Length: 438
Image (cartoon, rainbow, N blue to C red; front, top):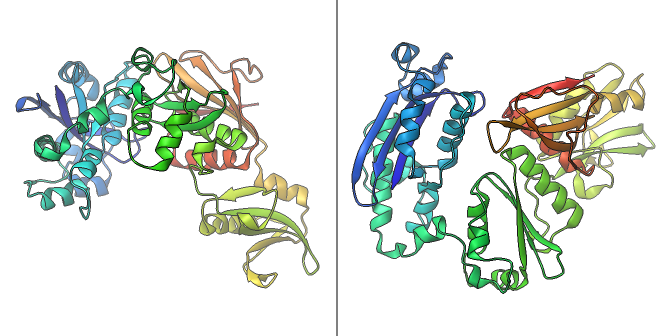
């Protein structure tokens, strides 16, 4: 059974946004069985942009049920069925978060019709719902309303099912990985059945128990299946020939999963990660001595210097940061030529580089609380001077005490990439809360 779902929301962030409408169709793989659809009172104002996009106004949802009102019915409607949506991680994350707010867990196997469509109909111009429905002649009358979008997704799903070239496609996305592709006594069907399809990291080891690949994923079992899905590439055959053991950590927190992945990639340099990092780190700030300006803080390509003070994904991001620092007393921002090339820099006016260091590196300490694998727990990340130090799992009702760091069970190394990951994640505001430590 499948529940094919679409939602409308007050925004794109599942931590700050709320659901305004939901539609779900129960499908047995051959035909529709049942339907669930309702507006939802989000309890917060609907932004004008969202109102113009969806047509859903504050007045329309004023007398609608809250999510808590419909949670039990939705839970029963989707129980024992695979959760299907177009860009499923979006819909699933919002619904999971709404359940978490009322103190309930929500866990379902998921299927994404975007991924299925890429395999079923390769070479299309776009796989967005609005574009793919036109290309496949699927009727979509009232876009950006949940029932209309969900019904169009149903028709897309049925086209995927009926595609004759899709033999084994659903097994590839939903079935367990095939342990027979590996020559290992440790990786069996029974072992794979113990791995939940939840947010976390998965690790692959060779016969010397050396880490050869690490991957974070919102669905770690699916990530294993994807990595072990047979193909004809040389990398694939080399990889499956090397794998001897798999382990995993369920985090619940996307931030912790990303920090674990980065920390172990940078520290252990697993062979099959091929040096790839999950975030671009092309530019960095370096402290340099010059004849003309004395000691300066300069923005350059990362490969052009050693020991970066701070790294950035793009030149613009680094430039904006330098401009902000340059507005502080004692410093002067210069966009002019530096060593015969355009590398913006900060020079001292009447400040000191100790002042500059404190302007760049925050001296505060705090704990980030984020979701864990159950609603009864929270993932806590300790941060000092902008650097993630480590993490641990705490009881959802347990207070964080200022100087008691006994809950930190796992530590991180001090790589500049770790600070960047944290900085970017905090800007997205997708965590529960921050608790300052004094």
